[in-house]
Image (cartoon, rainbow, N blue to C red; front, side):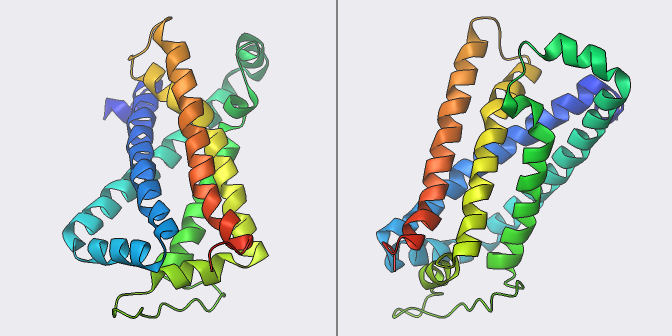
Length: 221
């Protein structure tokens, strides 16, 4: 319970849950990129996931718990920082602060709102978009056509693009920060973690953002 009662413990929980979510995002990106193989690519991938029900639900439970803990701890730590001594805090950190690090709570909030929307949109299909999941010529759920039909709208496609920018900004600082919090960095390794964080964030932005971009451009139909 000391993990939740001390500042160091709460930051440790945030780092571990953040690492879990980064790993999940890597796997999610690899799966989503199968859309560029056409209907057979992503439809086969989706069908494979449906056959792994225990794994899928286990992942959902673990990642859902990690997300809730991460959000709760981030809000608590942010409120504590604001209540401590804002002027002193700003002066001591301003030389190292970046746009990404100063806006972690807001980019995190944007990502959290997007996750809720994304689940309502594609998983539960309860958004007002009348999204339908049909079947392809092989009788599989036609995820490809569902994704293309949905993201071909400028508003929804734009929402996904903005969300990927928020994800990039959040991880731009977050990846380096989690290694630092876990005590896995030093004066030599910290810049390297920062570089890899920026590279990985850029990959996520390009990889995820390319999907709505090419659909809006009419390349994927």
